[in-house]
Image (cartoon, rainbow, N blue to C red; front, side, top):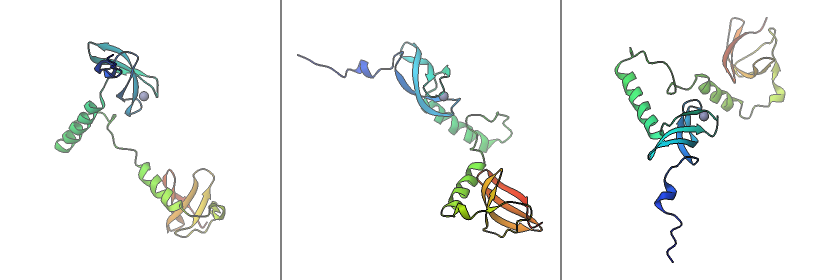
Length: 159
Ligand SMILES: [Zn+2]
């Protein structure tokens, strides 16, 4: 009457099982389905998110690569490594966050529809046909710098 429901073999990876792996297409650690193994080594996986098949890359391996690349970059900027999985997030992320924060409690119904004749002042909330809602940051010489979700744009104002 020995019941071993959870044996070591159950926890072992095998073809058809899910495992955590790095997906270079999704550019993040995700659940993958194991599609090929050599002995106890996972060699090929399929991303459960984007369905792409690729060589297995453990998340730990990637973390080490990222650390190595960061180190190499700080040591020698001349390294002509292509920008890839480990590049910095696009700069728009920072301005998007700022935009989200600035928009916070603003009443969008009160946004001023944008036209080049619009008289804007810093802090004005405007509604641009193409860029959406934006908050005027600086006004200089008939031009306004406006923070939109996609980042800063310079618009003609007060014409
Ligand atoms: Zn993927």
